[in-house]
Length: 625
Image (cartoon, rainbow, N blue to C red; front, side, top):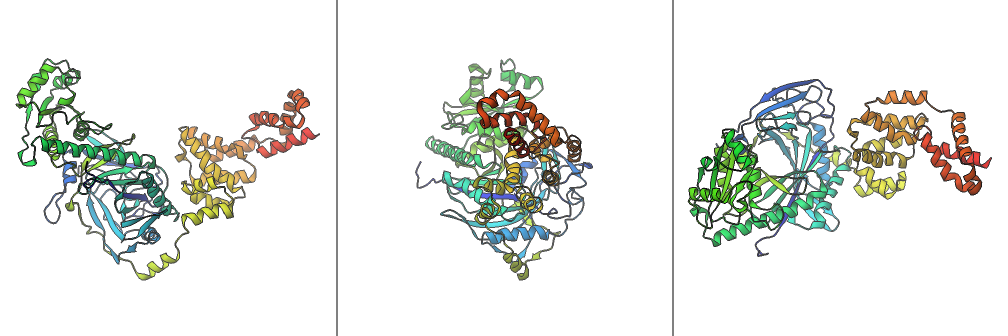
């Protein structure tokens, strides 16, 4: 392709939950469910803007016509989340955090904030819209020698948490709904593989310097805006893992490049938007005696088989220069949103039990020429007309190249269709919340209390607290950063030990499929206090967490058991003497060099019961005697 006309540009939008004590528009806290649940249902419909227009993204979602089920915990949700009570005033705590991050980025806050409604009818908001407000504009993010302009910083309410969904309904939990979320939109830049992940990481660390952002799975998400033609932007929503960010961008680059090539080939074949001859026809009777198990099952269940003509598309639907970039895959992911399993297309047939003779009959039915293709859709008659129309529109969009749309990431670094891009009709003013002025006194107070930079905090961990380079970065990036800084002031336990347990040990437990989210900061603090008092051995930390997570033991129960089973000095000495007696030949041969062997044997029996240093000192003393 002509490099002058096509250039990959990427813009990042970072969404980060704030660790405020309440939600954005009520006094509930979204992080502490108490198990007292209530249930209700909704069916959401699109509304028109003040100018009488309907947002295309909302209209698309409405065609799925799903029923929405909601689970509300009375400790984390109230009537505001259920849309049965007007929103309260915006959280001043969340506003202050957003302003702090704005000043860290050099952005300029607006004089007065006005809450807006953003149409969202996929069920993730009970109201059918998300409340959002622009806090500041401008500013810059500095990443080594790179400077990225900040377009805007907004404060908005997070969406509900999806529990499960199927063709007929979706179920959401309201505990996450309206947790304050800061959105930082960076200006688009030319993509460089080695820079994009660094940008997201640097911005995440800048926000974490405040100590006021939530940590853990789902608390930070990246939306990525990707374009190669400078006009039609693809937004990939909700990338949670930085390590696949580059894969997703590179996949979209290849997918969009493929669409440009398809457009250029269609032009060469004489296809334009105004002469696009498309039609569809029911072809169920062609497959009455088919060998295709899938189509046979559809017909047996009173479903239909529809064929859509793809004029001049022969060889283009299955075109795949790079894995996953074929047009057929895009169309398949599109129809899945209407409850269909996928499609068949002419470039992959005959196959899947569909014969060459059946393909010829479909071609004749559609009156196809040699360079025409076709797509076959099978399934229940419900929503089939809408799905067929969506396929026809998607084929038509190939004449313009890249359709602007919203997509979602897959675990293997690709993307799938999600919905059309929203238009200007999506936003309108929130009438239930009065505007809020940002006075000079607040600006001054926040500027005076800005946190130290990431580099300064890492230096403090190393030079004043005594952590090594690795632990300094690990504890800063972990969700236990605030707890660590509290513990080193409250308990007399080495900082290196605390940092290692809160990072390396907890990560290893998580990798072993142990749900460490069950452990609260209060329980962790209690464990370290008992280690300080000597009731709990340092080596027992990992086992305690396992017992609490896997066996649902309470920390007080574990502590009481350890007190009851605590070994006396005499008990410890007897065990070590027995080991020394068993290994006397090795001791005679190696002398003091046998220490490591004795230590290993002793810790097999005493690990988690006695501090390793006590065991070490005892062995040394008994060997020297």
